[in-house]
Amino acid sequence: MARPDALDLRNVLDGIADVALRVVTGQRSAVIALVLALFAVLWTPLWRWTRTVVTIAHEGGHALVAVLVGRGLAGIRLHPDTSGLTVSTGAPRGPGLVLTFLGGYPAPSLIGLGGMVVVTAGRPEWLLWAVVGALAVTLGWIRNGYGALAVVVTGLLVGAVAWWGTPSVRAGFAVALCWFLVFGGVRAVRELQRGRLVDPRGRRGGTSDADMLAALTRLPRGMWVGVFWLIGTAALVATAWVQFG
Image (cartoon, rainbow, N blue to C red):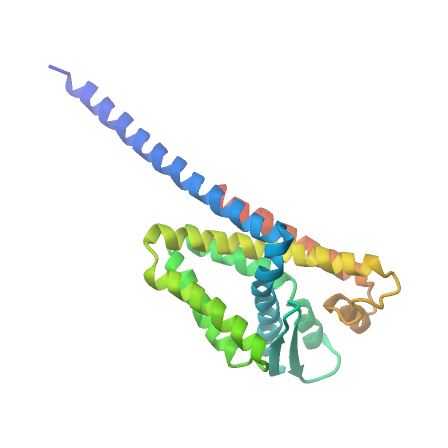
């Protein structure tokens, strides 16, 4: 007959093994979601389709900041080439307009980071329904047909996963979505920078957020691209720490 202390030790070891197995399994699923998100961003043919989701987040960042700083919001347009435009009304200069232009490129990465905090807290369904709600609000400000179609399709996809997906499917999709937004935000900044390098005189991308910020603040365009890089990279590191740290 085994001694009570031996049985207690065996129970403790069994419990530790069970916890370790669940952690390893969870980490493996998280890594798979990360790899799929990275693939969707790095494979250019797929990126041409998925980048519109990043554009929605980008323009949503402009719109949200415009409202927060007291500017009027006239509308949002999304285009088939994955570009977008958010039109706000108010003073043609000043800190409010600067913050509005500043809010676009960091938005996808920061949304991805915030979403990962929610997911790791065990509430992926909260994130998915919050995305659906944000897309519904965004739809009310869309001013062209393609933009409306892009927002509706994205909302239907996320809503379908939130409604019909199993808990594991919802969690995996939410993690992949967060990583996609973080990686996509960084690639968008890289594309902004490369657009400038192709034409140093600025004929391409002359109306980009960085160009507009340079015109408003008299600070170099490259500095603003650097700010976007800094925020995107910090969000990437923070997202990795939230999930794996």
